[in-house]
Length: 331
Ligand code: CP
Ligand code: NVA
Image (cartoon, rainbow, N blue to C red):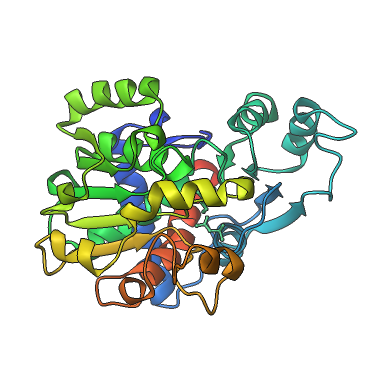
């Protein structure tokens, strides 16, 4: 039987397909329990701290509600709330927090930071997004695919259109390689992931039956079961807006792309937040400058029956809860 007790969760690279399936099954169980109104105690007596250098809606709230649902306690420290990285090193901070807390979540810029925390805390550390990876998001995405696509993950053609070099592009490719999926990254070549990471995942794919493909041709969306996209400009990259719009405009997820799949039931996913609606999202001046009404996904697709983005967002909570329960819970 799989046990993840005491493990950190820094990237899916560190997890076997069996362990990922275990987390997905645990997530589904916890979701059913919550739906049935059953209060849990799997994190009773546990204290969790959340360190956020960057802003968040879903990830922060998923960790908070996840802990509270299972009877634990949570402390939130936003950027500027602690000494970490300013008066005190990451290493010393990790050593201190590890004496107080049973688990530590980190969201921020560098993957190195979450790794230093994990190496020094003596308790599990969970990656809530860095510039390189966003592994908890992938669990929510795959749970949503399992719920809405009538095929096992290893039969799914998964297309990621957009910035394939960012945390989502990297992490989805890793997850797909692990789970034996047919992965396609649609993006201009300069936005494909590093050759090193692609080569590493192609090695994983040999063992799992996955295939890892990149293309600049949007016609390769044909027969997709899932189309996924993410913002063209990630947190901290705001200066890149103009360049990215020019590079990624042909890869926008719109009804033409949906039609090109020739799959009437193709699923649309997005980690959110999404730039889909000129009237309700920020950056209006930038859209207008380029004559766009939306960026990575049109409002039409976002609100269509293909889109399960809010089921996906809900699943952040169930899957993050599963990661905490699996690594520090009273199982
Ligand atoms: N998808 C995601 O991580 O959302 P937040 O930035 O709101 O946490
Ligand atoms: N690539 C995005 C993901 C947000 C969940 C970012 O890093 O801002």
